[in-house]
Image (cartoon, rainbow, N blue to C red):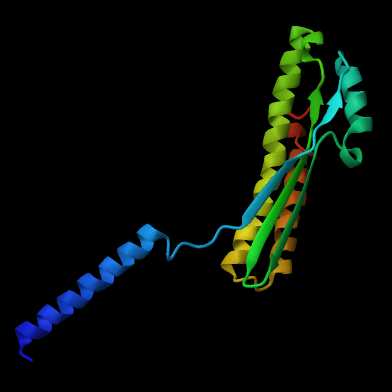
Length: 169
């Protein structure tokens, strides 16, 4: 084989490689599987028409002593099939039109802040699942402990969302 033939063969090999890579990327053959994510909403009702009443109802009726709570589970099996379940428990007002306009504004602002805060906990679980998947499920429990530590640090840093607007007065 002469130099020109070798050069043409090498060029064809490079083109074939790049074409094959492009096809794989377009068809998703190299795509990493995403964990299966299931989100469950478990609202609880409140009906008070004063800030004090709402605080009292959320303190008594909220999940495990909190106004809102995100319960997550990350599990894996088989060929590193990772699943995430996120359950949000948050208050829902049964008659918001009965609140004064000012209280309704405060309530809506607080609920938005609460949702953002709780969704951050959900993202921690999803990040843990992605990291476990990226590690091919090796040391999954250690990865989970790390992200649960992130949850605790996040709650400590934000005083369970209070510094982010999760308060009502």
